[in-house]
Image (tube, rainbow over all chains, first blue to last red; front, side, top):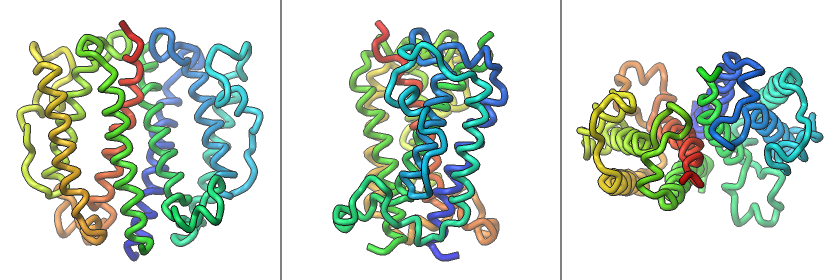
Length: 162
Length: 162
């Protein structure tokens, strides 16, 4: 394996590790615990689950893998803050959508060649990409893995909460 | 820039972005706010600051850059949980050590060649590294960037707390 392929393996492996770590926490949290705030007057777990599902879903078009599967989540969980939308989808539905989105992403991630990770993502024009070639798919995946980790540090606060 | 060097730039850039983002939050938190728990009965901000400083400091030997600067932080902030050590170092000292450690790391990061990132880290033997070549310095940096992001998601909960 050459060093380019090794670097891609490290970044994609890091992504998978973040998804698995969050899966593990979600598996331990009841729907009732997801309804709790992560800290006083802060986001609820259920909002964060919807938020991460929506953001990961939007990675499908951003990485030019295809259309978002659940675009209806964006207005609720990305554009709007928690507790501003009257009724959120039920936890059971969001848990399923979370799994579906990550499965679909993984289907694409595992077949992408090492070179294809260095192609531009969808939010930069071909002209700008010539000057900023680091704004590629690999960079998006690394940033979104950090995003998962950031919110995992918040989800963990719901464990052991009755 | 070839793709190997591009990948290294993406991962090191991601690390720097995490350090900067946490610096920004720390700059907004008073020492009094750092004394608060991030959530009821959870770690205090000051403990997390010491924890991240100690973990980043230990990256110096782990990345084979040199000795840890403040090894005395490890028993307090890595081996021991929060509120089990009677007296923590003052916030002012930890803030300075945080800056010093990250500055020292950055001095090494900026001069490392793209190839040197793919050499083994200090916690794997040369023999094992032959079979597991992804356990290299680049992988350590990516993992530690995720670690910063995880705890940044907790530090942010201290903002707006009186």
